[in-house]
Image (cartoon, rainbow over all chains, first blue to last red; front, side, top):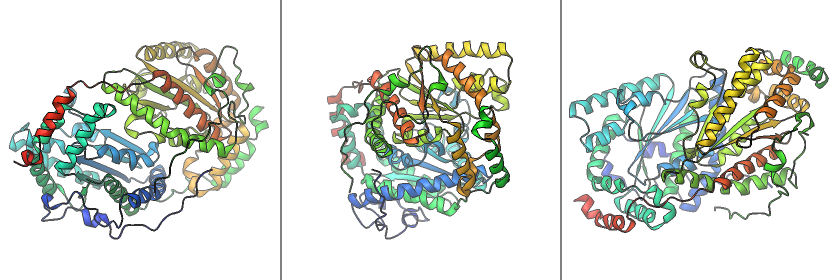
Amino acid sequence: MSPKKIRPASAWRADPSALLRVEQGFVLADVDPDAPPGFDGGKAEGKAELLADAQLLSDKQERLFAASKGGAPDAVLLVLQAMDTAGKGGIVRHVVGAVDPQGVALTAFKAPTEEELSHDFLWRIERRVPDPGFIGVFDRSHYEDVLIGQVRHLAEEAEIERRFDAILDFESRLVDRSIRVVKVMLQISPDEQKRRLAERLDRPDKHWKFNTGDIDERQLWPDYQAAYQDVLERTSTEAAPWFVVPANHKWYARVAVQRLLLNALTAIDPQWPTADFDVEEQKARLEASSVEAVRA
Amino acid sequence: MSPKKIRPASAWRADPSALLRVEQGFVLADVDPDAPPGFDGGKAEGKAELLADAQLLSDKQERLFAASKGGAPDAVLLVLQAMDTAGKGGIVRHVVGAVDPQGVALTAFKAPTEEELSHDFLWRIERRVPDPGFIGVFDRSHYEDVLIGQVRHLAEEAEIERRFDAILDFESRLVDRSIRVVKVMLQISPDEQKRRLAERLDRPDKHWKFNTGDIDERQLWPDYQAAYQDVLERTSTEAAPWFVVPANHKWYARVAVQRLLLNALTAIDPQWPTADFDVEEQKARLEASSVEAVRA
């Protein structure tokens, strides 16, 4: 009954890693949240691509995990940032959810607790850096400390500057430890956000996803966009680049982030580790441990 | 392109929760690891059932998560124990992997670290108890402390006794906190373990899953079976029962554990929480926060 998986021809016409990457001179306001850069198709083709590549992502994740057992230091860290309703949760569910949960370390960062506030802002972040072999996922991240920090004036300008420096240092240390950092901002339009918030209000089974604060934050849209522009300009580095993913179409955002992850894993090119034991010797030991011997 | 999901008639002829539950007088040696209790079909039907119920499990998990946002205390804790190669990893990947990773808290317990050893054995366990709304999964658990503890004589008899008491106390506290505890032992035969270990040795892409210690533990099969018998007899309580799942057929073990989880969620019967805000008022606020207003 297991359906045969036939890989359809990919609908990618260009690599989204190149198209979506934040380079010098990037202007967030120029991003069209409705566009599907590099993808030659619509929702149906997007969903088919997501399904077809899920197994590939899963296979590469298993190799990454296996390689770490042989001592390879590599890991991946996917950082997700966006305005409310932009679809971070859908990325986690539909992209990350396709790989073995045993190889994923997901953290959803909320407003910091008292204990977290008693430490520097990176303290809680450092604790959640993925171990070798893992795909770490940050649903929100240390970037909140320079985004909401700026927009809501939660910190002085000098403190925000200090945090920017600390973030650049921190990420460069991650890269030195062979952690590939893939930073994604999902970009939706204010109109699309309105539609999504309206749906949450219309459907009783979606009320739990709605917070009155979402509308407060929405009122600050231009301020957040300015803060994101600042973050994207200052922290998209060669080693830890940002990708801005148009996200008015959920199918596009998902397939694009899947491809970014696939590219990161392809760049690592994890290999099955070689046995640290004598295979023939262990085969002989196993053979000797027959049922009779075991039950003896 | 998204395939229509047609729910085939279920192949369950009896509820595995009743059939697999450890009741008074249970004898582990009487369990046939090849049998598929309650299931009327083979591998094909098992895989179809797993696929068909994955969406159901995912839907119920979302409700559990949503309910917690409205203050419901409920959570589920799945405890997985077994001899090596019995398929704990496959359960995590193929059963738990079908639900939103955002609602799962998975912990794979390894040999305790120095820090963990400096605390009582339940210290590291307590820290990983699932929060309300979550499905917690323990891949190995506090039961190792009475299993390997006994078999390898890592602790005195009095200490083992103390641990049994502590475990019963601990689990009863979990149940008081509305955490449904589903304890599963996957039971394979020594022959099946031999086949699976041999496969790991035969395939270079499986070598990383093999540890020479697996054969050492295998030699102690009868001792482990006796220790499991002891654990099952003494800790299968009304509130936190054990289920012994025949696992020579991976497809059966997966569909059975899926059903045990579904039953736990059905018993909780989580409901969408009611809005803690005035829906009409928020709709009006959202309407007023038009794109123009936002961009103003």
